[in-house]
Length: 171
Image: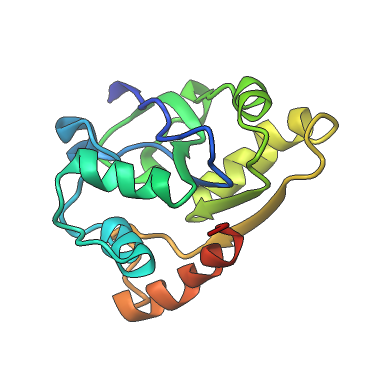
């Protein structure tokens, strides 16, 4: 069982969309990159939506997200977990990121999308009750997980589901 720390957000001043995962997996933590597992569909999906090669270097991929008004973060700041699966997170070990300050600093963000069920569940239980009175304009939507563990949808189907985020990008 490891005590894990997440990453700071990928975010720019013009961000309008926030994509929330739960907690980086082992491959991501090792690489110090969001969605660092080679079979995670996140970067291929973002590449398809925003017309960039998912093989670009990590800094360039982050730049492409920021240029397209997309922010990325995780619900969990830290936790204890063995392996990479969300189901292995010890609930009593969960530490939540500071969303009050995040949304206060990033007022253009109106849409929050959850990358998978765990992120949405923990957010709705532990974050939403505190945030709602302060940021009741936020809109939420769950999306299919990009994790290789969620294999019931093919990449093409995931891309189709994730296209919804493009309608909130201002060009």
